[in-house]
Image (cartoon, rainbow, N blue to C red):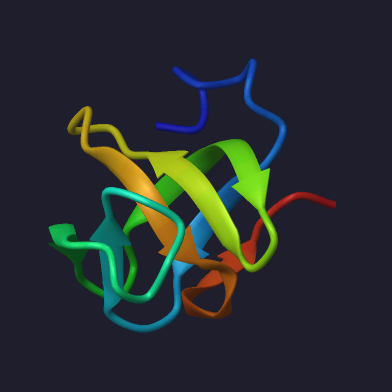
Amino acid sequence: LLALNYKYQNIYIAVEEAIVRFAPTETSPTRHVWPIGTYCWSKDQRESYLFVSNDRAEDGWVNKAHLRSLAH
């Protein structure tokens, strides 16, 4: 995963179950639910949300509190 997505500098891991939403708000419908340990990379940011994608081509908005950066 990391090698395939080298162009994305911001690699993250879900540190708790991550609710992936259609829009960057708590009231937005759920698009996916990712388990702890899911790797993803960010493509955009809005306040407390990141627009992220994973290696299964699932993407959407996740609250930053559910993710930890792996970048140094």
